[in-house]
Length: 289
Picture 1 (cartoon, rainbow, N blue to C red):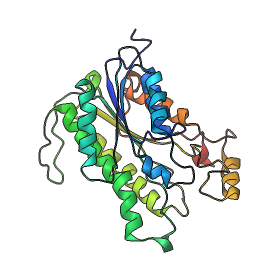
Picture 2: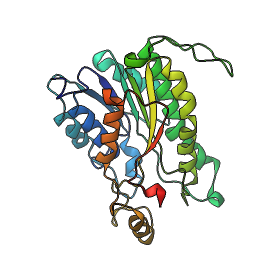
Picture 3: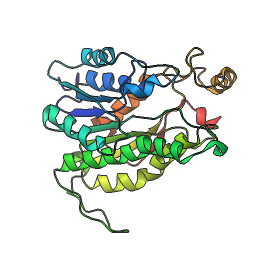
């Protein structure tokens, strides 16, 4: 049974699961197939404002449910992670699914209402920061408190992390953040790139602190993954730019959502027990071109 369902008995919270073609749905389905109980969050109102449009949330949830192991449970909540109170509300709801929460995957992302340096406004920057960076940090903090069952001590700058001593094979908590291609130029996406770069820069600090509490944190830069935004009919960018990027892909294709989900599955399982504090670029070598 363990070999068939390596995550059996664990509960995962996956954010940003609102489209069947999305990375979040692929991650939720992959973890469900691995045996985890899966709690998802979604906010379809965001997708309704995008060129690709909103999906049927009931159909999205059904995709994940179908892949659940017989003993696993499923839960969901629709909420806007731009709300400062939403992360703690979401973690509490996920914790209520089985009583424990071992895995957190922060996949939520705000798209649109962005631009170049000359276009930037406080509104653009704050909107991306709130969802992409602030919510991820608050989700992780709430997850860590739930995982340890302890409130965090008030630390001063330079204080060494004081934890529970749960390291090595006892580091059963897992957190995965989704960053982006912020190491490369991202023309016209200044607010988005800023918010994702903030996460990448925080990884060493966050991972170092959480490690002492038995939690391994890593981030993934998935490269260009076609979730519909690279299709001609629903793309939010010029067709010539899409063709140029496709021509630079070493394997001759864009990424698939399941390409990301496979790496997440490995990181949160026992096979990933030796990896912490990394920003893993998983883009078929696109960043090398």
